[in-house]
Figure 1 (tube, rainbow, N blue to C red):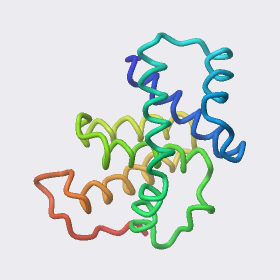
Figure 2 (figure 1 turned 180 degrees about the horizontal axis):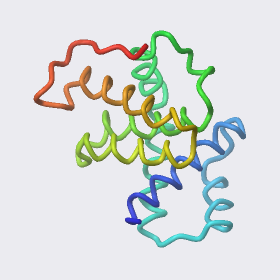
Figure 3 (figure 1 turned 90 degrees about the vertical axis):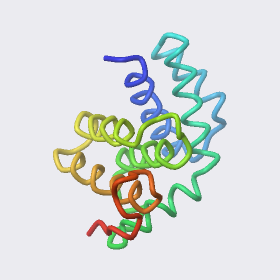
Figure 4 (figure 1 turned 90 degrees about the horizontal axis):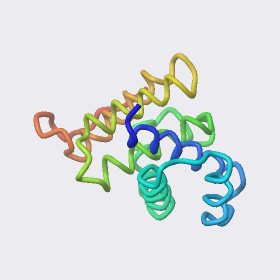
Length: 148
């Protein structure tokens, strides 16, 4: 498992905990998490950077997800799926150093491991639609692709 993949898994777990614990102080959350799950510095740095990015851009991220999930309210999604979608959307919209295909593949892989059997396909569909809407796939039109 690559260090980046491990960092993404940690970021999803941290985002899940942050949401479940109603937005607790993120520095305290990091401190407790790394005490229980020690990780190399590169993993910690990337995971924390992603979590802080998702938290700071959560309104924009949630709006992007909601735009393509018109049949689903965010609250109806499983908390782990929300965390995965938020991380994937953050990487697509705010991390131009991460290729869209990598963001999608990593999110799908994490969804298959941490969520239900159907979550991988759902996450793929949502993130693919977001990437297309926001012009992150240069060979695809940016017009709407809706996830039903």
